[in-house]
Length: 196
Image 1 (cartoon, rainbow, N blue to C red):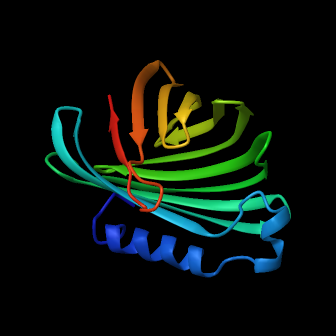
Image 2 (cartoon, one colour; image 1 turned 90 degrees about the horizontal axis):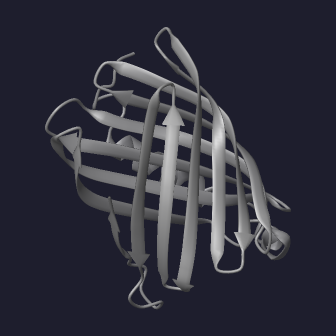
């Protein structure tokens, strides 16, 4: 089915994220959990994607499942010039907040009339002020199937300031970037970020 704002729009994504967050795991599991408590975040940004100006809205909801296991759903919608873009991803993982995360992922994205599907695995290692994230698996777009891989190295200068380098590859495509996120005041749920 081609990407269509009527079949996957921001309201549907945000409703799904909200529903997952509200249907959280038992409060008694929080102390031993890989996810301390259900949480959600939303972001809005202006961007240029393949030369088209876009307004991008995204959201993430994470919830504990049982013990060290958790689940996360991500959604995004890019509105503006050029073809429509949006997608959803799901993660199920086991996490030790002091050490690492290992999980499986599934994703669907729509770009214009193209549908892209991914199935894969992910891992994170928490190394003092650094976090190393690796992900990879299989991608299908129409009749084209290929492997994909992503990596990200984040440096936490403080609890409220993080710098990151990332890279990705699939088929014969390569990408890379850097970003920074700053939370001015821990008392408010607001961050400022930039990426390029």
